[in-house]
Image 1: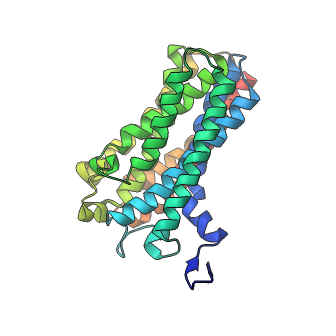
Image 2 (image 1 turned 30 degrees about the vertical axis):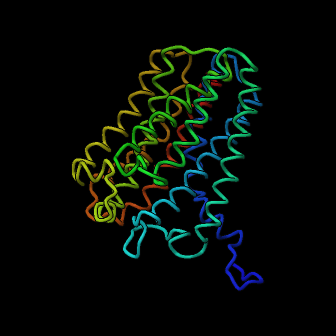
Length: 308
């Protein structure tokens, strides 16, 4: 952070990287890797689709992180008593005005990347308009989770949004852009990565449950209460694993497809830590563990599909 000519503090590169929350980016990439692996499994992989989809997903995740930083500050959820990493606007490292400008730039970049993705993936075909609406909805969802009037994250709808955009849109949508089609079996891996991504959000919300409840942020974890949120978490993690196992059994072509099971110990360790947790603040390391576990599972899953 540096001081400008007017005496105001200007955020530096380190401040922006902190605001981007780099540890969340592998989760966004995982859905694209899985969807592209499925396309390769069907002989439809297209490198430009993979690259543009990955860029768009990362930009959307950064946009969501910036909006969340600003939104939770404005709505009082980020305060001196919050658990987890210090937020940029709350701490004064980045001003609210600078964060709004960054959101605008990131949103425009995500839109441009998404349009390029659609032009490469669908040209000007009959589904282009549908995907354009989906992309605009993704941008709106990234911003409106905690920012603006009536943010849906404060009403406990964040889990559903993550399931849709990280699962159905992220995995199945990426496959469609590669292959130009869709088949029902793809709902299983889409569901798997959607459920695991939802579990990452639930871990975050269980960590913040006390502060969120006090500030009126009615996440699903707040609505369920700590113990039922743990049971819900178990269903998300095990449900995701079950979806991939079932897909592999139905679509089996070779033993490499079972390679995704190599990450099961990582997921099991995470689940054990969550279920045995008694202090919400101790859940913070589990965000990184599950995010990376989901990403590594996506890589192993895609590699197995390619090698089968």
